[in-house]
Structure formats: structure tokens, C-alpha cells
Length: 428
Ligand SMILES: Nc1ncnc2c1ncn2[C@@H]1O[C@H](COP(=O)(O)OP(=O)(O)O)[C@@H](O)[C@H]1O
Ligand SMILES: C[C@@](O)(CCOP(=O)(O)O)CC(=O)O
Ligand SMILES: [Mg+2]
Image (cartoon, rainbow, N blue to C red):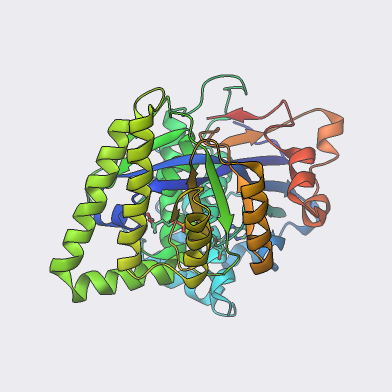
């Protein structure tokens, strides 16, 4: 299989509707892909063939490594087989990557570089061409609970899987159905999970599953040695969701570690909290299987959002700014609010009641603007991992590192290379 450069891979972010954090403790959770996505451009420059470079302007980070310094010797290559991800990060590889990462002092940069190198060395052998540059841009807010880390890991796993010859070029075009499944998807999903491990230690796998397969899922991790269960929810009933970003930065790694400590220190009481979260996710799943929600179902779903948020508060993962959003939405009676993703800042979702008057939203937006919060309506259940390989001159002109670095807004990214704008995108 010949690899054609340049190419772009892409994957969506996600919204967890029920079950964040409890998902890490093998409880079911419900999440859907989001219309905001990450794009990874891969270009080849033959005059710079000793190096592999990354350009991650979203986090103000660029770095490059000599190809001969990469620890390819830690991977045993069997050309007849595609590499299988280990249960845990490989200790030898982790050890050998240490010196390549030691000069990086920001945890944001460190996590991104660690996932990048781990997946590069695992999926591309020594024969990886030198002179490659990987430029990443995201239309998602980063570190805000919408799964930017998983969409990044999926883009990396897909790109390295394609370069390493483990993932065939995708063929499914734009109009075919969402929540796609294939051998390639399974491979990308499993390796993206390793990327998530590099970034936040103990992921459940729900974010990479949604970013790979798209659509909406009920997901349950079954422990380290058993495969997770992923049930596609094909007809998510229409739900009016408002997403609000507190813009308060936080790291998933810190919040997941905080909950882990609480679960260790208070095993009995936290077990009840996690059980309650499981019950909510299961009840919500049964309700969300219906093609539409009657009044009674809507009322119940609103209450479940409220209960789930309360349980997350008790795990210590809310933040005063998330509570402010909840307070304003409660005061104006526009719906029920819960944090989404790891919490501690980042985003809240509000399930809106019907018939909220436009002037009420105006009032709410003024309150939010005064605090620097940003609200947007989300489209849920979009496409999963995709690849753009094109021979069209007008598209090729856009696929330059410089162009990727200089995009100034979400709209510019979407208009230039976006999945919703460019016809040539294909999905695995
Ligand atoms: N576009 C991007 N460019 C570079 N790194 C990214 C990008 N998106 C995500 N990351 C990595 O993922 C981390 C954020 O992951 P995380 O804390 O799990 O938050 P979330 O997944 O909710 O956005 C960042 O610190 C960075 O290391
Ligand atoms: C808290 C958790 O449930 C979701 C984290 O999502 P995010 O990184 O905040 O987008 C962790 C996980 O499931 O891996
Ligand atoms: Mg994340």
C-alpha cells in the first residue's frame, strides 16, 4: 500500500450526557459525537528527512525529534500481523521515551508529546519516512470536557495506522450512515485508548470510542482484561441541549486522580454514589431508545440530569463557575444543568425545557457574557474518524503546515478543510 502525502485525519469531540467519572469504575455511560472536530495534517518534506516534527499551535507547542533517536527497538515487528495494543502502557517503551520528553515542562505539552511519540513508535516501524510534519488544529475547546484529548488520539492513531500500513484508506463517503463500524475502526479505537492513557492515566475508553465510531453510544468498560461493551444508539431522540464553556481551565488527569483518591478513602459511600450514577445511565438509556420523548419522558430526563449533576458534585468535580451556570439556568427556569466530561471547570450542558422565550435566553446570555462564559447549541451524533486524501489542486493548495498554523478561527478551519465543507472526506 503506498501512502499518499499530504493527507489529513479527523475525529469529533463528544458530549457525555450521563455517566462521566462513573464510566472509569466500569459503570455504563451515554455519550454522543459532537459537530466540533480535530484535524491532523501530515506532510512530507524530503529536504528535512532526518526529523519527525509536530506543530500543535492550539497549545502553542512545536517540537521535533531525530528519527534515529526514536526507540523503535522496543517494538517487535511481525510484518504479517497488525500490532495489538498492550493492556497497559509498555514499561520499556515508557522508559525509553523518557529522555525524549524530559525537556518538556508544561503538562499540556507533555501529554500531547507523550501520546504522539507512544503511538508513532508503536504503529510506524523504523521504515517511517523522515521529513514528516504533523500539524494539528481543533475546532473544539481544549481541556474543556468535550474530549479534545480523545479526538487528538484518534487522529494520531488513524494517521500512524495508515502510514504503518495497518489501516487501509477509508472508503465510506459523507452521506452514508453514522456510527460506522469496521476492522479499521476497532484498530484505531484500541490504539487511541493508549493515547488517552498517556494523557490522563486511567481513561474509561468512552471518549475514544465515540471519537472513532461517531454517533451516540451507551458504553461500559468491563475491566482491564475484557473488551468494553459499546452499544450504538441509532435514533437518539431530539434533545435541545445548550453547551456552556466556563473557560475555566482544568486537566482531566487531575480530576480523575482526585476521584480515585476519594474512592480509595471512602469506598463504601462512593460505591453508593457510583451505583446511583449507574442506575441513572440505565434508566436514561431506556428512555432515550424511544424515537421521540413524550412530556412525561422529558420531565424524567430533566430530573435525571439534575440528579447526575448532584452526584458529580458529591465526588468533588464541580467548580464555582459550573455552579454559577446551573444557578442562572435554574433561576430563569430554562432547564436542568449538569457538568459534562471531567468537570472542575470546562463545560456544562443544559437540557432545555420547551417553549423558553427568546427574551429569557437574551437575559441568560448577558449574565454569561458578564462572566466570560461562552454558550453554543450543539449538534449531536455526527461522523467518526475520517481521512482526506485528494488529488484536487484547489484542496492540495490548502494542505500546507503554514495554512494549518495560520487558521484564525473555527470557521476558517471548517471552510478550508472541514468535514462538512470538503466532499473528499472518507470515513472508516
Ligand atoms: N488540538 C490539540 N493540539 C494539541 N494538543 C491537544 C489538542 N487537543 C487536545 N490536546 C491534548 O489533550 C489535552 C486535553 O485533554 P483533557 O485534559 O483530557 O481535556 P479534554 O479531553 O476534555 O479536552 C491537552 O492538554 C493536550 O495535551
Ligand atoms: C471523566 C471521564 O469520564 C471523561 C473525561 O472526559 P474529558 O477528558 O473531560 O473530555 C474520564 C473517562 O471516562 O475516561
Ligand atoms: Mg480528555
